[in-house]
Image (tube, rainbow, N blue to C red; front, top):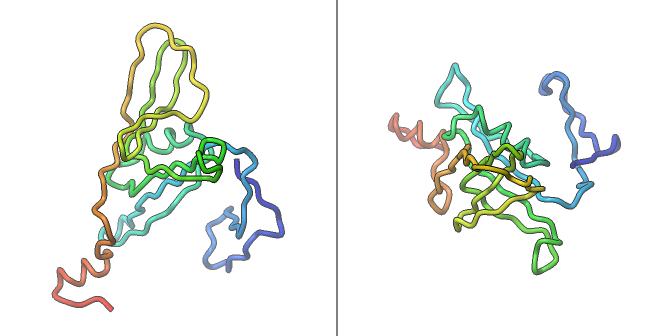
Length: 166
């Protein structure tokens, strides 16, 4: 889980803030367990060529699954699982880029299974004692992105219209 304190709140000008939101300069991890960075493209419905990437910090694998369920897979730009130091041979936090998110279900319960870019499957939480057949539901497969940075949308739009981006 993530914790912050009032002294770390960042004052956003009223014209720029979303109603009810708070912005923080710093947060603390209160539990040394895996957590996630989910990057999703948000597109303006009035201007389909205009989009921004928002990145969410998600503390639990079940919350990740709930957020992914209604999303269009093409909007997901990446998922990173931050692994705690106690799961690392170096004793430091490390990251695993996620390609697939699965939900395994049986009458005994459900659990989330992840596959990293090497295809290795792993889980992050308690696994129920499955009884009977296990149903495996693929929630999301993130297509590998080419190495390096591609042109941004602005450059892409300008190129389509025969203009250079500055």
